[in-house]
Every structure is written in C-alpha cells, then in structure tokens.
Image (cartoon, rainbow, N blue to C red; front, side, top):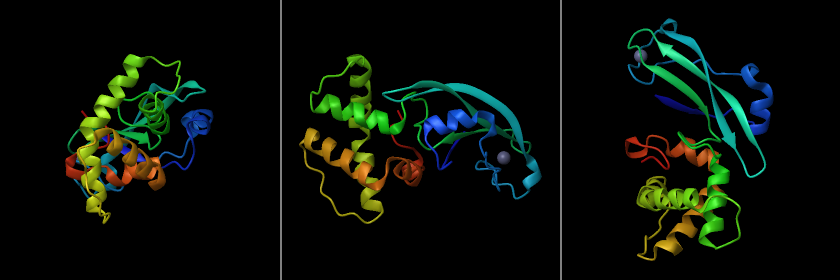
Length: 176
Ligand SMILES: [Zn+2]
C-alpha cells in the first residue's frame, strides 16, 4: 500500500537528506483503520530511483508495517507517481514535449508509454476536476483535452494534484 506524502521539498533536497528526512508517523493504518498508534511500526527503507531532466538519483522510501493487519505501507514523496521513476513534473514536461513535437533526447518509446497511459487516465482526470467543482466539458478532440488538462494539473500544482486526487474513484493519477 502506498501513501503520498508532502515533504515540502524537491527530489534533490529529499535525496540530500536521505534517511534523515522527516518521515511521518501515521495516526491510523490506511487499511484496517485501527485506532491504536502502537500497531504501526517503522519497517526500514527500500531504495529507488528518482529522475528529472537533470538528475538521476537514488532515494530511500520509508516503509511502515501494521502489526494488526500486516499491511506494509510505503511513504512516497508526492513529487513521485507510484511506479514511475521520473518525477511527476518531469513526466508532465516530457509528455508536453512529445505532444508539441519538441526535440527530446529521451526514449520515444517511454514517452509514448507515458502518453498512452495519460490518455487512458484523461476521463478520470476530468471527473476529478468536476468533482472538486470545475465545470468543464470533455470534447472528443483528445489532443486538445490532453493539453488542456496538462495545464490544469500544473496550475493546480502537480504534487497537490497528485495528493488531492489520490483515491478518487479508488485509484490514483497514471494508475494502470
Ligand atoms: Zn492495519
């Protein structure tokens, strides 16, 4: 299970702090909702890559285990989308580059994969914005809609969007 958390810093600073980041202790297990604090225990770290256009860096992800329901919870900084190595901002930038046919030295195959996933997520993104009170139509022009929502996500703040939309219709941004 993954929890998206706002550390208030970017990838580089998070990497600098490493295991000294201020990792949160959860009040409540997100799975069994047990009330007791004492059931949640730190359970080490795993290391993964975080990538922007400028840096590729390994960072620790803190794990918490619930002794009640045995679930393992990863505290993912909110600049990362689950299972994506590029930060959310970088994923959005790269997709924008591809849509607008800008030159890129990234693998086109990877960018296509991002774009196909994003296109499949577009109705979900649309329904999230409707849910929080935006009134927008969704036209059948996919490219136009793709660009419109990239801008809306940016204007909202990528990481805020990721956290706020987390759990909308029981899923998260860019989930398969
Ligand atoms: Zn639990």
